[in-house]
Length: 473
Ligand SMILES: [Zn+2]
Image (cartoon, rainbow, N blue to C red; front, side, top):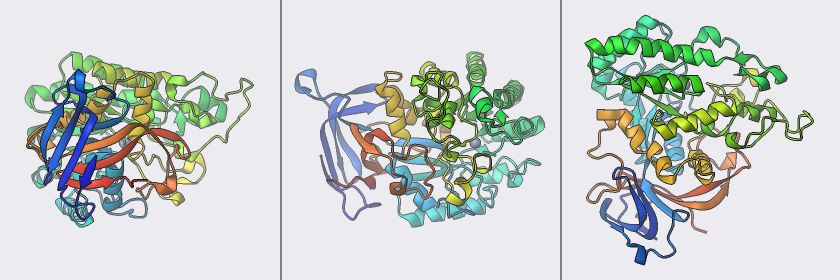
């Protein structure tokens, strides 16, 4: 592999040749041994090798895939730049292999006005990062949940859809109006499905672990009733506004995913995403267990005596929606496999130590997760729960489809000759140990600190320009 990129991050990749690697191209559905040549930022050649020439190349070595797309990130600018800035967030994205990210509008002020979007775009430009920063606009003015934001103005300014993420849209009439107006603009509503009347003071998934630890339960019904409400409204809106679309983000319960499965079967225009942590962690982690969700034993205390073997209440595990039971994590994985879930989105949620390193019930919700997403997803691949091609699709073509027309690029994410290079190169089997201090994100809040993950990112190229390159040892 040779790279002559020029002056570092942001520079056009003058020459890049990767040979004898494993290519994954979800746009064409093809994967196999081959190589790629990039000249002056453009993919000049994609070469697939015959079996006879492919000796010794498999999907466990160097992998070349389209750059990842994240539908759900929090970059905290404007308003909480101590937790993250657009610049640090884009650096973290590149470090995680992402070349397109969609910023959530729960900033201070909220992104409910084109002027806020202009500020975010200026910050992205000033960062020099080539990672593409798209943005969701707020559904309601100030995200206050009282009246609709100026959706038309936001659409004209270029938002990719609307969300009040951080909270659900609080009332059915607002959901109906939002789906109607956004649908007329050809854009989706992204719902954070949570009925706040059921989660006041809630701390952890309502279940065995929360009960034993004495944490206030966060019922599955708080999410499922919001999902059911939106799915009941959607077909009525679609009758009048055929382009109306609903996207449900970070679904976490088996019941929610079943509702989406049935809605899709009925032909409703609904999509959803799941997060790496809801796929791979479970509420047993709150009790000190650190087994992947598919390795859960039902005995989070590990030694069979019920004694707490690791410090519980790690506030890095406090997240909204909460980490659920291992069976819910299994349902999230099943949803990815059967197409109920369209994408993996990180819900990258960096926080300062002041907001996060406090008692569990007072800690801010969220995990700084964009840099560890690939490693967590590859743990599922290594456990044969998901193929590498399925994992890459859930991080590329899946989210691009959710963005629809606002994906804004000629082609779906793919390895396409003649297109600007937008690729990630990673060593599938090379491991690295997560060190919070070494994350590019300002948010050091990760429950994976000290854990070894597979899948070292070697190179991220966005729009033909260098976004990240690993130091060579
Ligand atoms: Zn959310």
